[in-house]
Every structure is written in C-alpha cells, then in structure tokens.
Image (cartoon, rainbow, N blue to C red):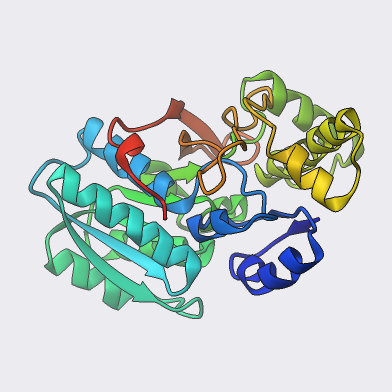
Length: 299
C-alpha cells in the first residue's frame, strides 16, 4: 500500500500495524521509522536538513557565527526538519532562528522581514510550494539577497510559471530523497522515457520516479517472500527487512532496510532550479552526506 500526505501515515499507523500491511508512505518523518510496517524510503526530513545546512557551509553560502532562519510547518514534517537543522546548526557554529507557521499561511512577509532584522544570512524552509513562492518574492521585495534552502514538499515545477521564477533560479536549493526528473542516470532516464511514452502531455515531476521506486521496493520484498516461501503479511514484512543495498539505478540512493528504526539512506540529492529542463530541477552535485550526519540519531 502507498500513502500520501505528511500527516496521514502517522494517523493510520495503528490500523496499519494491527492489520500488518506493509505500506510505503509519501512522508519522510523520522518518527515513522518506529513503525514495523511503514517502509520509509530514502532519507528523513531531519537528515536532509543536516546535509543541506552542512552543504551551505561547505559551499560558503553561510559561515560559522552566522544567523540562519528556519520557517517550518507545525506538525510532523516541520518539527522533524527543525530537529535536524537545530542539531546541525549547533555543531556547525550557526545561530538558528526558528519560526513556526501554519499550512494556511500564504503571505510570509512578516516572517521574512523578522529574519532580515535578525540578520539571517540564509533561510531554511520546511513548508509547501506556496510558502516557497512567498518567501522568494518577499526576499526580493525587501532587498534580502540570501540563499533559500527547501525540502521536497517545498518545490513544485508549476512555480516556474510564476513571477518568482528568476528568484528561484538564483536563490533556491532543493533537498530531496529522490533524483531530479530525467537526471543523467539509468534509472531516472528509463522512468522518464517510459512515462513520456505513456503520458506525453503530462507534466514532468520527480515524484514520478519516487512512485516507481515505491513499487520497486514492494516488488523486491515480494520476490524475497516468494524465495522464503512465505507470502503471509508477516512473511512479506520479514522479507522487506532482508533488503540490503537496494539499487534503483540512481532514482534514489542505495537503501538498506535491515536495521529497524534506522533510515534506509543518509544521502541527499541537492538540486538547484533550472526552468529550461523538464521537472525544473538539476543536480547541484552528486549525492551528499555531511561528515557529521553519521553522529546523528533520528529517534
């Protein structure tokens, strides 16, 4: 089974556990790693933010002693991302200013203005594409020329048809567990070609590749369950826990599901915005894992 939305998996987890249904959520909150039957793919929100903030330091976008703002949704998504940014900021010598918002907050003028007054040298954003558009537009309007770092839910290719496109291309870095659409690797190229052949008029989105991997992981678990001659729900779960170094051809980092409570991967795709390519994102480099990341404990 496959679940979407960040809060839905946590709400349904007791029923999923009771019925022993192996389920792939479209959420990456580290709290979900505690569930026996939720197969969280790739990295979690907190680890992505640790890798992303470290990348900003490595690239000279921020430096030790700087203040960094983090605007984040209330709930599992935002709280988990803030946990990662707070942990990383302390170890990287940064001062973090967190501002919680609601999903209904569309105009973030007040929040961005406050961060400018605090002297923020960068803005981290754990929200949706609507808030990304607002932050990008507001920083430009108030003369705040700083890099912006968001996570997968904070970017939608549809933003490239809005007035903030140039600002996104100049300032926005996007962290994801999955490769950009059509990235120059076997997996993304194969999936993009198959998708376009079947849906030639559909918009390109990196989530297409993530959906493919979701099915691939469940397929690998079924193959293992067949080899184990146990196709019960318990058998499928046991088979899933035997999957190690799952290779997706570059759609996601190699994943290891053998350690309960641990993320399947600790490597993040760091991407930048490019309106000229399908899906709107291109790699800013290869998969990235900060040297401090292995020291972090998600739960």
